[in-house]
Image (tube, rainbow, N blue to C red):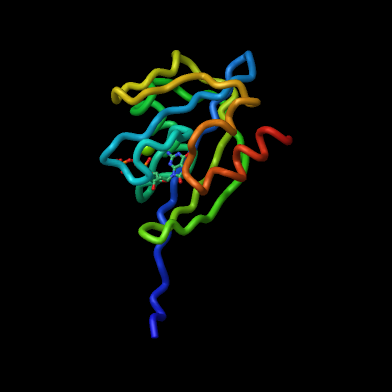
Length: 134
Ligand SMILES: Nc1nc2c([nH]c(=O)n2[C@H]2C[C@H](O)[C@@H](COP(=O)(O)OP(=O)(O)OP(=O)(O)O)O2)c(=O)[nH]1
Ligand SMILES: [Mg+2]
């Protein structure tokens, strides 16, 4: 009998909006989990960090912006089989700098109405649903 409790990885995820109401998305690299899927930028919360702290660090590292205002949007638990994740998604409504793929990853601003045509990881479906039907 397998009584092992799987450990979930806590991930801070940013839904970044511009004044035109578009959302910034990036494409994951070939060596990453969920390779080549599109994502909302973010990454793992390290020990001793809060979610907003981790989000600020990841968005600086990955896309070169500084978060000024963020607010909780939703939290999603998902089991990929090979990995279990808890996504803590924050809406980023104010920031400085112009987001760009600092690690060479493809990235772009997408109108909310077009988000459903992007290939996101399975865990992201409720996020896209919520953004399109607020
Ligand atoms: N950033 C991000 N991760 C997501 C999304 N949806 C989703 O299932 N994930 C999963 C994929 C990964 O298993 C995990 C995020 O880890 P990550 O690879 O971004 O972590 P990290 O930035 O710290 O990067 P790394 O150094 O491990 O490559 O969450 C999403 O929209 N954005
Ligand atoms: Mg990341």
